Length: 254
Image (cartoon, rainbow, N blue to C red; front, side, top):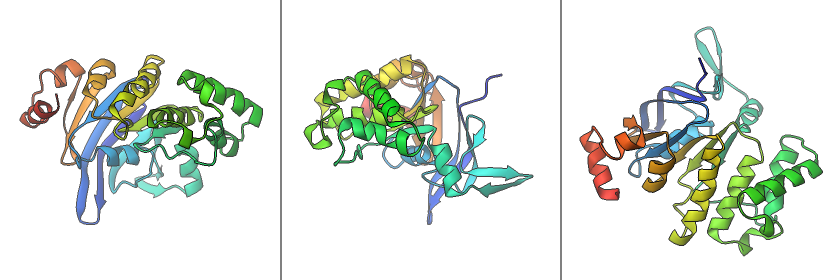
């Protein structure tokens, strides 16, 4: 049996008195694309941040490629890993945010190459060659010497995707990667993500782009109120949802 790439078991997360995740369980197999949809405040982004331990979970278990995220188990107890160990594990998980968070003083190519050199210890020339190839892959080889201020939002987001891929991740997480873009810039970013899916990259995508979810996802997950209301294939969930809450949400966004 193939080990799941992501396994979440009854994951809970609170911020003070506010329970944001209330027992989320989800399995993502290698090479699968899972799109997570739902209203604002439903816990989608928080769950994504828990997958790479940007947020610590309060209960439950989360593993990536068979390894617990942020913890080690000894007997029946879980012990939190040191930050250095967490960072090492996090390096294998690429994450692309709503806002691009590029270094403004670095060119596109420098943004892509920085982490492989500094974190993975890859030789600069090797990182540069791989960086150029990744910029080519996202359609921006000709912008490698441009600074973020010289790029459109869509171009910056594609550089951010190339930067995440430069770490050679086993899993890619996307947190509403097109929500901050002008509508005419969305298509180029989605095309890059579509290409990643076709190449076999395991992806969890929090998105409002229903057309992308319908076309690319293996599984669509609808979250509301900190729980998974239902999940299924795009044809099942988007075309024939079982739950009234899902039907109500889709009736407003489709």
